[in-house]
Image 1 (cartoon, rainbow, N blue to C red):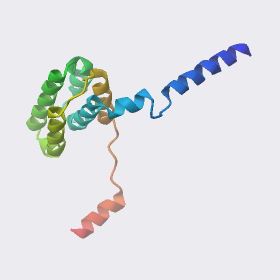
Image 2 (cartoon, rainbow, N blue to C red):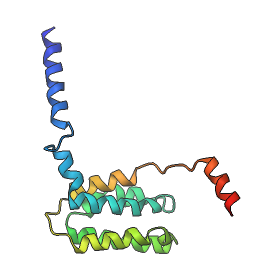
Image 3 (cartoon, rainbow, N blue to C red):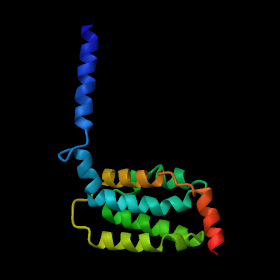
Image 4 (cartoon, one colour):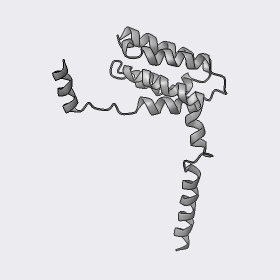
Amino acid sequence: MRTYYIFLKFEFKFLMKIQNTKTDRFMEITTSESYQIGFMLGGMAKNLSQEINSFEKNYVGNLTRRVGTLFDFIKLKNEIEQKLIMHDKSKFTFQISYDLAQKVKGFNSRYDKEECAFGFMESYFKPIPKKDPTTKKEDETNI
């Protein structure tokens, strides 16, 4: 019985540490500029995952190595934008690309590659919402 109590106490302490409150580190991460630019880049890169078979292996799999500094982040952003243009996918990312460029220009806090990668992964692996079939029928009737 005592061992169960020890495990329960350990698990409780762990859950208390990761609890989402205003003083929690998780809240700090999601509001950081590093997280936000990573999140935006992940959304852009998502458009390449269906076009380039080795994209995840070469880019996403080695992400923290590729975004070690803010300069490296800019280099990766440029590479992704070039690939989007080469695969005729840039028309979907004009606005986010511009917004990301403005955010990078105004970046004035400490850059953290882990927070950047966390934001990237969150948006990159976020499921694409499927369109409701009834909405599609309404769109066709409005044309």
